[in-house]
Image (cartoon, rainbow, N blue to C red; front, side, top):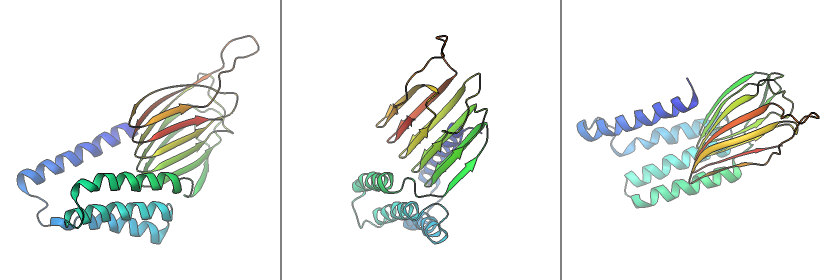
Length: 217
């Protein structure tokens, strides 16, 4: 399943739960305390250090903001800006703190939800794939990879998060996308072979919602 489909299913599930709760009150037993689940997940990440302490703190603060809103200890119209501040702090301080991995796979499929993906890919026939960061971040290092002779297609989705992709100097990169309160930036340069023909192309499709995507050498 693609990352876009996974995010779509997640949004559908959240919407369905909200409707069921509104019609049938299925969460009446949880009442105002359901954000404790989010806080618990954050504390587990801090204790186990499965991604980074900053990520765990961000999840904990996220749950705490929701809980305080449910308990009317802060105004509910302040919850969204508080979440934006938490996401901003994570974006500044949390990136690059997670564990780094090294792989050699031709097609990638990374999904970061309240976590970091930091990977070095040394594939010698890179064909693309997809990377999604939702309240998370991803650093994809392809500097030692070789692009497939037929080119590659890479889908990048950043929702309240950020994605950085590093490519070698010899790659041509074409970026298109949909920015919604976010943006993408292509810092690479086009090159040609000695005979004047374009070298294989990396086609990048970006979706940035309150997030950012950067492709650079």
